[in-house]
Image (cartoon, rainbow over all chains, first blue to last red; front, side):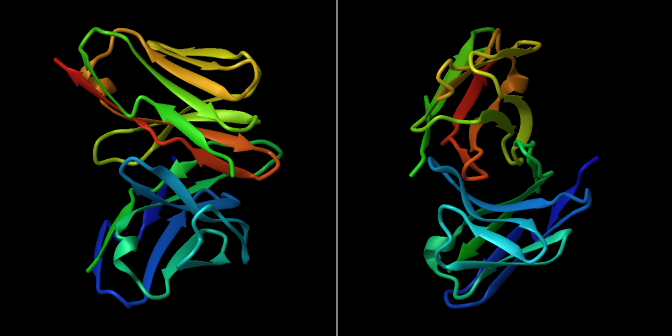
Length: 114
Length: 111
């Protein structure tokens, strides 16, 4: 069974703090993704990575950065958290290839910035 | 940029009634995936459609991919309380290597 784990289920941070969200997958997937989920907006892609040290911007990368130093781990960094980054953050992973593969999601981290 | 819209946003049905959610993309897709997210849970993959006009069934669920590969639908026959959740489509374009998720349809089933 594919397992994607995220470091925290709930997180409360203050405005201006640096925030790290960690994601680990155990199925040797090449692709990893970070999404944020907000009511009425669905899932929006922040960043994705198709290999170690490789990253691509998604649709809403502003205010975020990512790091992928090992294949199984993909970190999302909020350099200076703001209240509009309060959201549910979902990590996902998938195989890579010429077509699309199903994504496996982690349980999510609900981040509140006060 | 590419957008994927889903309608309706919410749907309440009586148990036993049918349900359909529609997904429309502003651009042609390489394929489309459907996911289900139970309340308090995370999205779980249901199915992927690749061919123009493709229809796939999973028990009471029927998935369709439009001829132009710009729209898709999910139909549930005779809903049950276990069908409660939010259904998302995700369009994939081979040119961008990205999935674009629809806004989701939240289904409530009244017993």
